[in-house]
Every structure is written in C-alpha cells, then in structure tokens.
Length: 421
Image (cartoon, rainbow, N blue to C red):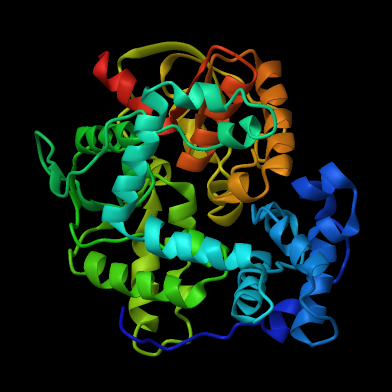
C-alpha cells in the first residue's frame, strides 16, 4: 500500500485525564472479576497507560503482559460515568508498544500474521482450506485430546462450511426496492460462516433490499486496530471508504460485530487525516449492524415458526462499542415458536475477543467456562449471537463440555422462520 500519514502512537492527554478512578468499571471487567488484581482492571491499566505515555515507566514484560491480557471488550466504556474512551486509549498504547524496539517478538509475529494472512484474501483462503482439511480428516479431534495442547487447539475456529465467494449483485427483491445496501463480506466470515452471509442476503432481499458486495472491498482492519497496527488499519480503512462510497448505497450492512464497530469508528481512526476526514464521517454514518438495520427498516415479522428454546450472547463490540442490544432481541422475540430466555451476564465476554483465544488461551477458557455455565442455566438448546468470533468460541464451548446444541447468528433464525412460511 502507498505511504500515508501516520497517527500519534500514544494516547492523548485529554483522553487519559477523563478517568477519575471511581472504580465503577471494576465489576464489569472480565479479567478483574477472574483475577481480583487491580492491574487487570480498566482503572489499573489506565494508570499504567498514563505512566507509559508520560515516560514514568518502561514497557517491561510485566507491564506489556497487563496490556496483552486486556480483552478490549469495552464493557468498562458502557458503564463509565466519565465516558473514558478506553478502547481508543488501549489501541494507541498498543501502537506505541508495537513501535518500540523492546516490543515482544510475539507482538511482531502477530502483526505479521494479521498483515500477511488475514488481510490478504488469497493467502487467507489457503489457510482456511488447510483448517477445513484439518477438521475433515479427523486430525482435529485427535489433537484436541492431546494433554497440554488440546485446549489451545480447541479454540481454533472450525472451518466446516462452504465458503462464500460471491461479489457484485447478491440479491434483488421480487417487488419494489426499498433500500440499496452493500454487504461487508469481510475476511473470516466468508470462510468460517459462509452460511451467515447467505442468510443475510436472503433476509435483506425478503425485506425489499437490493444487496451488493463490492468486489474491491478488503479487510476492515478491526484486528489490526485492536492489536496496535494502527497505520496499516488506516490504509485498509481508506481503501474501503473509496470502494463503498463509490457504490452510492443507502447503507453498509455488517453482520460481524467487531467489523461493524471498527467501521463505525473510521471517522475516529482518520480524524487527523485531512484528505479522508470528511469521507470517513460519511462512511461511518452509513454503517449498520444487520439487526439494527432490520429493526429500523422495519423488517417483516415472519409467518413461519422455529420451534426452539433460545438464549442470546451479546457480542461485546455490538453491545459495548456500538451500543446495540435491543435489536437482536426484538428479532428473536418476533419469531413464532422461539422461547427466548435471557442468560445471566449475557454481555460479559465469552473469551474470544479477536485473536485473544489464541494468544491468551488460559484466560479465554476460564471465561468460556463461565459463559457455558450461564448458557446451561437457561436450558436453551440454541445460542444466538452476532459475531463470528463469538460463534466459534461458543461452538468450542459445546465441544469442550460435550453438549448437544447449536450456535447461530441471529439473522439465521430469522431466515429459517421466513423459509418455513
């Protein structure tokens, strides 16, 4: 990609000054709840990040470890009375660490993987095909039973679905076109959960939308942003802004909560870029989670039935970053035959958190086990959610506990109801 302006690699003093250390975030932070350590809380990490930014401490292994243990679930933001932009502060802190010569080799390897595998469609396709073969041959089942490495292997996403590889016009309604929308196909979703894209297209066309997928779109950059590679994420954002704004659509639809949160914040990411600042604001205003868009449309209440007891896991970046919580529930409650049961602390992170389940498997599994206990208490047979990472993590939970059940995207249940009418 061409050279582009860089952004500050440290949090702003204004952002850091917003924390008044009241502690209201503590019980909403999954890592603090698990460990009871102040340094594993938002307040503790903010203290460390401020000290790093002001040069009072060095990025030692211990300090970096506390940054790495953060899920970036942003639950703390949702409850903060001072509106501390914790996610932005953490992203810029990680960017500063990544640029430092003392950055851990694991961080540099992670950055290379995200740049050269996740953000490159052809390479990612090869990687996904290898994972698909790994699962189909039965090798995965064997590896997951090996002591010591089985738990880490368990958290790798299942690639069993056929990939979604379409672009251009994906669907047109039978009647009048109510909205013209563009779908972010993304990087992980087409390979791991291609069926979710197929359901999304069917549901949108059923509700009067012409759906297109711009062929030149690329990775949204969410994982790069979360892991501190902000300048690369900016390049990805600029490319997507050019591509999607060129379609002239009424909305940009996203069915991956993490991607949607990142794209809604392109205006923040590119706030210091005079060439893209205004276009980024226009772009972010068009981005809608699929559930949010359908409820605002409004969607057609399905005449068909889906007989199931369903619970809902709030995807962190939908609930805490985008603040969308009622729309998925409204969709689920609209489906005849669905018995909807709320789980305890449904908005607490399941432990997926982007690449967290691979970089911090021990904490990820602790959080997953807590989540599966909450699911068990509901006695639901179907777990609905809104993000591919959450879907993969919850599927791992079913396998880990040898439970029958199913993990679906909210839009899949709506699609099933439409198809049975």
